Length: 279
Ligand SMILES: C[S@@+](CC[C@H](N)C(=O)[O-])C[C@H]1O[C@@H](n2cnc3c(N)ncnc32)[C@H](O)[C@@H]1O
Image 1 (tube, rainbow, N blue to C red):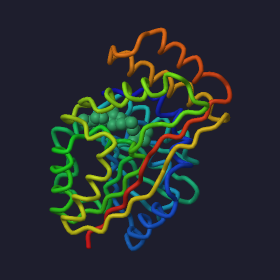
Image 2 (image 1 turned 90 degrees about the vertical axis):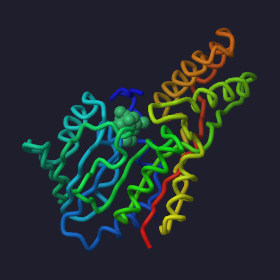
Image 3 (image 1 turned 120 degrees about the vertical axis):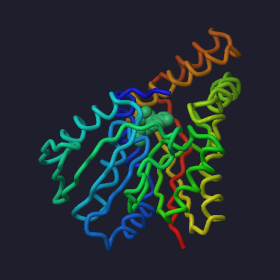
């Protein structure tokens, strides 16, 4: 499944303001004693999770951004250079200075379905991800959780879709559109049959069973008129997904889409964050 850098860029402000700040602070405390913690960001895309996390962490950090999409990894280096106060290319990626933090960044191209533990023998201090786990299957979750538990690795993940969107004002086609969208959302996304909205709860449950303390927190997108461009893009994405199911007439999709793109539409999209620390 591929994602455009433009879409990831558009959602970044909503992603950053929606994540649970108390859980982020707890993830930061977990790393507080480390000189230069090593952080693996899975499905890193264009680097938004680093930009949303790094300022809460200590003064030196090393990030490894993992994704299978080379165009996104390349965009991540451009976006991170633009975000930083100072940026210097290195053999592996970049060295960044931002608000008195020194952040070394590497990019690593890897398919997480083939290997859910791309750190190999270089054990990280934290595994993180944003907006990734609603794509994966229960079988993949089992493999991933077992790999974390083997080395007692901490996990901090954010913005995992867990509830269908609620649009306002209501439209006659909401039920039909939502049901079709959810059917499409549950489709295979390259990791086997998708666990979709259930994924984040499953990860928490499985890690608890493997000896972790796991804490969930809400990180819903609450989108209002100031997020008009994101709401429009989200509605377009819904319409395209529903078209693929071939279960809703095009005239109904068009009517719903026109209403959703009208000024004044608001939308709440359910997300969860999770911090799981080995006991
Ligand atoms: C919704 S995007 C989130 C990107 C980024 N974490 C963010 O918050 O903007 C999901 C990311 O997972 C990556 N991805 C999906 N399947 C993958 C796989 N099998 N292996 C590696 N990366 C994958 C995509 O390329 C994309 O960058």
